[in-house]
Length: 247
Image (tube, rainbow, N blue to C red; front, side):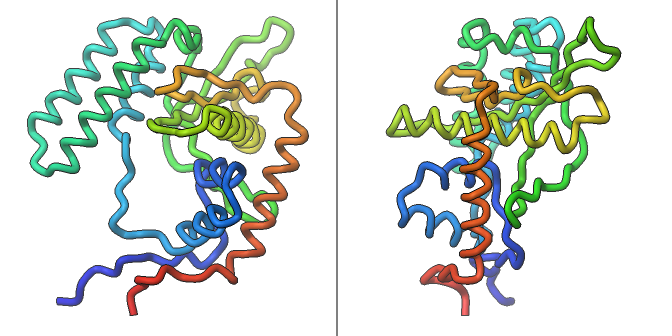
C-alpha cells in the first residue's frame, strides 16, 4: 500500500489570514518560507486549538456571558481529555483548556463580555486581494442596533490563539492586521445583515488578553496588505518546493 504523501500542492495562490499577518512582519527568508508552506501544505499538520476556538465561540454567543456556560464548555473539554488516546490529542486538549481559562480570566478586561455575538455557520469564499485568495474565517459575527438607522451595525471576531510570541510589537502588528482582514470580510460578506462597522471588527488575542478593533485609520495597513498579497501571488510560481518533497 503506497504511503501517504507528505505534502499537498495548492495550484492557485492562496493563503490563510494568519499566514498573511505573519508575512507582513517576517524577514525576507521568513516570507519565502511562508509562501513555500502555503503552496506545499504538509498533510501531517493538524490545526491546533480547534477545541478552544469552538468553546470560546460558544461562550461569546451566550448573551448573558454566564459563568455556567464557561463551566459547561470546560467540562466538555475535560471529558474529551479523559477519553483521549494519543499524546498529541491530550496535549492539544490541555492547551485548549488553558486557552479557555485565559479567555474567562480576561473576559471583563477585554470587553468581550459586552459583545452581542452569533455563531458563523457554513463556509464562506475567500477574499480576493491583489490576485491572492485570502482565507478569512471569523469565529463569530456581531450585530448592534443603530438608533439612527433601520439596519443594525455588524462586524465579526477572529480568535487568535498562540503562545510564545517573542516580540510584543510583532504580536500586536499581527493582531491589527487580522482585525483589518475581518473588516474586509465584513464589507464583502456581511452587508446583507446590516452596515459593516470598523469598530465592531476585531481580532481577539486570547493569551495576550486583547480585543483589537480594526479602527479608523486603516488605509496604510490595507495598502500594505494589498502589496503583500500581490507579492505572494507574483512569487507563487517561483517558490521552491520543500527539500523532502515526495518524488
